Image 1 (cartoon, rainbow, N blue to C red):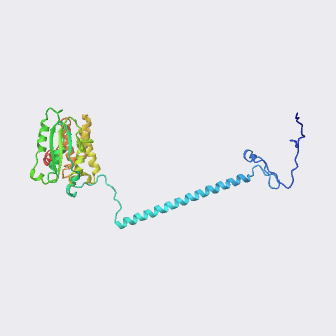
Image 2: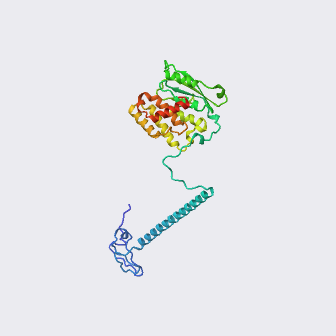
Image 3: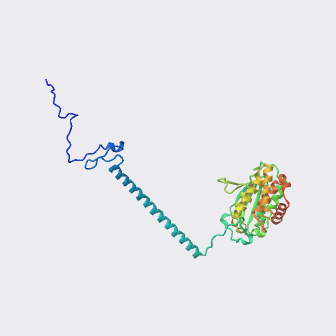
Length: 331
């Protein structure tokens, strides 16, 4: 049977160890972090003051400051290089402007001057854009702009319109009948020599939202007579394309107002829009100056469609503009 025996301890915990004098004393490392007031002994054992800096902490601080200074120096150098590149680019642009003889842009005026039809270059019509399409229109809201474009383009493009009546329309109004007769007539001698756009006009109960369908398979309609007018302006003769004018933004705002004049059902809203258009027209003979413009056509067609509700709000100058358009383009 094995028995355990006791062994005399080699070292007692309270024994004092004699430290050789050739070594320097060092406080525990933990006192550097948690006891800032602890005394730190130097290389020869002399105590340092509680406020003296720890050599290790001082070294870390110096390292961090150096790293921070290096980063700031690099950032400053990169910024300086970017500024130099921008200055060089600006100089290149100025040199290029000088070579091309481009003057500094003049201050934009509040209203840009509008080119007349005679100032727009008449270019050959792109036959690729002359595709056939269908227009659905209500006989209560006749799209007079089609008739205006047909007569306005009679020497440049043949807008060939064929009319049909949908089963939902039992009888056409006198206004629609007269419009159908006027737009179906054409001069065969001139029309036979011109490019052709074939339009199928179907009288249908679509309300104020006249729609144009360019692709029967996908059936993606263009809604609104004004938007149809925009589309045809791009396809037709270039001298009638309002997007080539300098004040295209102003023209678009007038066309938008004409669209709202037709489609707003509230009489007060229509009266407000009509006053806005009257202010834009001012005392001039037309929105496009001496020549009949797309704005004049859209405005005349819109007023003719809502004349029963806002007829009393049409001022004399508006009436002159409408009468001039009706005389020139046969509306």
